[in-house]
Image (cartoon, rainbow, N blue to C red; front, top):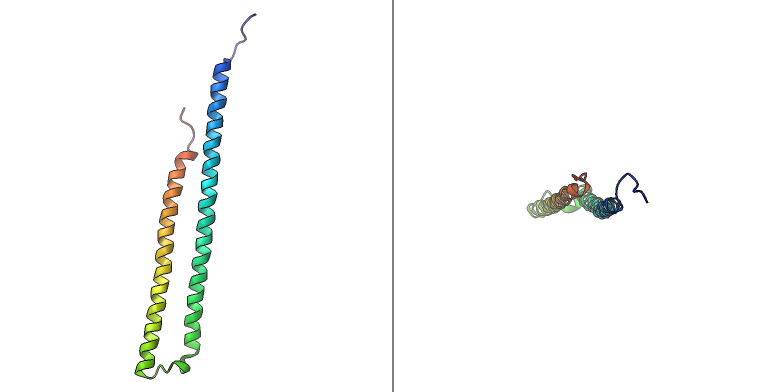
Length: 120
């Protein structure tokens, strides 16, 4: 029997195996990417909800200024304390979002190699 020209069975099988491996790596990278983006989106929505809640509390306090007795030293002190507490809450939301963003960016950076074209 004469041999057919073209790639050998071993070469075809090796290439098929390499492609299957690349597909598996890309599939896993897609799964991780989906998780990263979903959790980042959820965290962003939660942060917005927290900031909206803080804004609503501040708005309510300013609408009810007469009830707070801001014209008295004690009322002014309590309102100042309230505003400082809200500022700390806002700073906490922003810091948490920044930390999460940095962590997600690191994961995405690591994923780049899994999406890089095969150099072989």
